[in-house]
Amino acid sequence: MQRVFSGIQPSGIPTLGNYLGAIRNWVPMLDQYECIYCVVDQHAITVWQDPKELARQTREMAAALIACGVDPDRCVLFVQSHVHAHTRLAWIFNCVARLGWLNRMTQFKDKAGKDRENAGSGLYVYPNLMAADIHAYHATAVPVGEDQKQHLELANDIAEKFNHDYGVDFFPHIDPIIQGVAARVMSLRDGTKKMSKSDPSDQSRINLTDDADAISLKIRRAKTDPEPLPGELAGLDGRPEARNLVGILAAITGVTPADVLKDHAGQGFGTFKGVLADALVAHLGPIQSEMKRLLADPAAVDALLRKGSDRAAAIADPIVTKAEELVGFLPRR
Ligand code: TYM
Image (tube, rainbow, N blue to C red):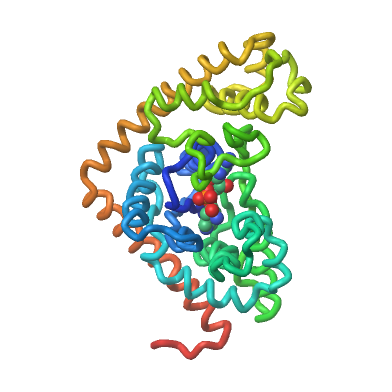
């Protein structure tokens, strides 16, 4: 059976972008693949995280995943820092990946901003750790949103160079699985920027924990243009905010954007936003109740994660030990 790996950073509350672009696609994979899903706290500290917040957010992220249907009995669900194989392999990959490759990573440029000299070095080598996350399990399929595509290409380059340098066929090729109309959900304030848990403006995103009032207010305030909705997809060209809201309604109700336009052609955003907000509230309500129920017993969530990390380590340790042997490290025992 093909093995799937994916990860999510506990750097905030999961957004509608995380949910529609990734988490929701993780769930049906439980039926078809051996799935390994990880809350990547080591990635999160590549930018400053308050220590108390980070621990809480890590547990909350795990609860959010379970509430969205990522059933820990049907996959391996765990926290990255609990399985040391990731950083052992990441070090080897730091030595395999070329600086020129890392220099091309657009996410580093975006996150480091203008003050590059002051960015943590972890932020720079982050894609090497991400490659290690996946290759430590010999996973071959990785469900992600559009923004992670470049990192996965790099993970394939690293695997190829490792295989070539050491004369082996050890790390397999990875296929990104980027699905659906919501592979790139945009900010509610700027249709050209992705919706992100780290955007300073909370109005730019729907958090999975937002209540009905917050969702309605954020959708009502979402940036749009003065034109009514068109009847055809071509009518959304040059209207990124309108395209984004249409895409969100399509994804949440399980229809195509063309169907959404058929139903709402000629409508102004006042009416359309009401429909969208109602659909979001109805969809996210049950997830929020389940999250609350799970977080009422934090020790139970932690116990599930401990079990997950034991299972993850049992898969990753032999693979990474073999990689260390291929590199020429003296065996530990
Ligand atoms: P992260 O935590 O930023 O996001 C988690 C997942 O959500 C997707 N996503 C989006 N999809 C659509 N629209 C958006 N606005 C949006 N924002 C986020 C992301 O593409 C991602 O799939 N580097 C990764 C975490 C990671 C990982 C891995 C993923 C670490 N190791 C190994 C896959 C395999 C990240 O920062 O995701």
